[in-house]
Every structure is written in structure tokens, then in C-alpha cells.
Length: 588
Image (tube, rainbow, N blue to C red):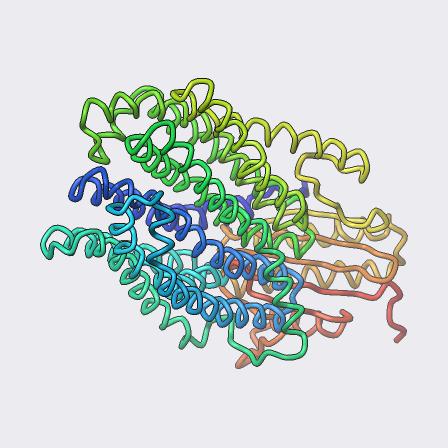
């Protein structure tokens, strides 16, 4: 009757999924529509220019990933461990240092822009001129992006995924509106595309200001102390695997652009821009799932909840499989639709695009699997594995395949991505098998379960007094079976029942729709009860009733007397309460 169902975690993943997919859609579609506007209003040469700007955009994303994703992951784990000051320090360093580094990068780029643009354009004077015009305002996207989107990450982790999504959606909506208006009506050329992107994230930065003045927020700026340098190193180390994607993208973009220009010409560069935008469309779902995954898995990993992590991954894989299958079918059956969307209407352009896009589409399922595992391994402490996947897929495999295919048959160049993705997953699977055998792990997730000497007991109940009472009797019997004396077993049973009843009353208002996950962890020294529910905020540590409302208030007071400690945190919109008992009961 009493067992863990995973319902609470699956519902939380679905709650986070739609806002994060909308966020990812806003980012990806902004890039896609940005390219479509440039291609249709300014022509194929301008579209190729957007593609050539890739290395600089990857540099901006690299800094953002180092600080933003690294900070988000570290803060989620810290909150899962209930280290609230550490989580606030991570928040402070992520936003403050991230914005500072972005600003230095933006200013430095202004001095090297002419020579850099000429180099990226392969010494083509026309392309170099357009590229410089595009990049000059675009590089100032960095500080605004770091502040607005970085804050949005923490707002999401603070249990407000819809507010987080709103920041990014508005930023990219402003970008697209001004993109069209500046180019179409003010005739400022490709400069308008770069300026509107920066303007959009400035608008996004304004949207997060209310959060900073909210009294209900859980992340706050704190004064950095002696531990700041070590914490910053941990942030950057955690963000490194994700940032390596951008490093790989920079180097890969430079190498592949050179191969394309040499073997396929400017029309090949236009096809590459379309392929990049197709991947952006794929990232609506891949990025959305990953963004929904990161704070949930990070928090659960900090809580050592392996069961919850596996449930989250199952939900993520289901969404990714369905979305990849639908997009792959569309690209294989009607690749010309993408060409038409980006203004490639010439017979020559369409003839080059259709076979190229079909071959590139084969890479998308591999890309989704690699990104999902890479994000997961980063969050669960397998940073070397995550970094190795990035380097293999981004550099080690794709460049040799690209060189060989371009020389053997240029039309098959676009297959290099799928070949690289397949090779990366094969090597990853082989390494996982080796780690599983060495560390005695059970699956490709490589989760280290709780210490073998610890004993766990997980159940899910409805947030009702009836189910709480029934579980209390069941838990007393379980404690007795584990060798605890009757006094200790009764204390644990009473505390669990009183906490569950109080949660049902205060957090769920007596409704029978609430759910409570109860996890027991028994070690040589302590017994720990963790209760997690999806109701309104209810902190038993600070709760003081205005007047005695019967056994409910007395129950909270009783728990404080029986337990060694009681801790509470509001995480991901959950109430999470941890009650700890010493193994040896207190003497009267």
C-alpha cells in the first residue's frame, strides 16, 4: 500500500517544462526569425554575414554558460543540502562577476573589431564591412544578457518558472520588433539586427527589477567573504562543461566555415546558416527540457534523492523522443520549407539546400541525447564525462569527418555532424560500461546511491490525516524491524504523523488533492525524515499561531520537542522539511 510513486516530481517537471520550452522558444526563434528577417530584407550576403558572426556569439554564450549555468547548478545543489548562505553567495558571485566580465569583453572587442571582421570574412572586404557593422552593437548584448537571463535562471530556481520565462520572452520579442522596424523602415542595414538584439536584453533586464525588490524572494545578495574565491572556482568548474560547448562551437565554426568556403562557396555558407537555425529550432525542445531538468535534478541531487532524479530523466526522455521524431520527419520530407523561410528561393540555393538539410537532420536525435546526458552528468558531479562528450562531439570527431567527406564528396559534407554524434555516443556508452563495472553502478546515469550502510524507506501519501495516521503505524513497525527500541520507534511515528497532519492542514487547507513524499534515512548515528509536498508555503520552524487551533498547533510544538533538529526550505515551489533524530533516544 505504501510506496513511492514519483507523482510529485513528474508534476513539478511538467510545471517547469512549458515555461522553459517557451523560454527556449523565445531564444531560438528569435535567432531563427532574426536570420529570416535579415535574409529576406537584406539578401543572401547578409544572411551569410550572420553565420560568420557565430564565433563572437559563441564567446558571449561561453561567458554566460560559465557563470549562469555554473551558478544555477551550484545554487540548486546548495539549496538541496539546505546551505542557504552558500546559495546566496553563489547568486551574488554569478550575477556580479558575470556582468563584470561581460562588460570587459564588450569593450575589448571594440578595439579589435576591424581586423577580426576581416579575418572571419576570409579577407572578403564586402563581408568584412557588413560583419563589423553587425558586431559593433551586438557585443554589448553580453552584460544585458548576463543580468537579465542570469537573473531569470535564479528566478526559475526560486519556484517562479513563469516569471522567469516572461523575462526572456519579452527580451526576444523586443529584439524581433526592433529588428524588423530598424531594417525595414529606418534602412539602417545589418547594424539594426545587432543593435536590436542588445536592446531586447536591456528590456529584459528591466523586467527582473521587481524581483530584486520582492520580500518573498529566497536569493539575496550577500557580502563576499574569504570563501568567495573557492566558491567562484566551483561555479566556473561546474559551468565549464557547458561552456566548452561554446569553445568547441568557436573552433568548429572557424574550421568548418573555412572548409565550406573552400569547397562549397558562399552558397554553402548560406546553407550552413540555415542548418544552424534548424538546430536552433531543435533546441526549443532540447534546451527547454534541459532548463527544466537542471534546477530539479540539482536540488534532488543535493537531497540525495536518486529515485526522484530517475523519474525526472524518464519524463525528459519522453518529451525529447517525441519532439525529435516530429522534427526529423518534417525535415526529411519537406526540407524546402526551411529554404523558403530564409529567403533561399533561387534554384541554385534550393538545389544545394535540400540534400544538405536532409543529411544534417540526421544529427538532431544524436545532438538531443548528447546535450541531455552532458547536462545531467554536469549536475550530478560527472564533470569529466560531460566535458569529454563536448570535446568529442564538438571537435575530435566532427572535424576529421568534415575534412574527409568534403574531399571525398563535397555534397556529403553535411553528414559529418551525424557521424560525429554517433561516434560520441558509442564512446560514451563504452566508458559508462567501464565505470559501472568499476564503481558497481546500475545504469548509464551513473548515480552513486546513498552509502550502502544507510537504510532508506521512501513512500508517497495523500496530504490527509487518514493517510498520515496509517503511515505512522506502518513506520513504527518498520523502525522496530530495523532494530530501534520501542520508545525511539514511537517518537519517529508520532513526529511523522504530526508533521504530515500539520502539512495537510496548513499547506493544503484540508484538500485531498495534495501529495507528500516521505523519505526515511537511517544511519549509524541518526534517523532523518524528509517530507516534501506541493502545497502553499508552510514553515514549521517559524510557525506561530495567533491562537491555539487545537491539536494541529500542538503537533508542531511536539515535533520540536521530540526531534534533535528540524529544518525547512522552500525549494522549487515545494515545502521541504527535514526532521532529524539521534539514534539513542534522550533519557527523561
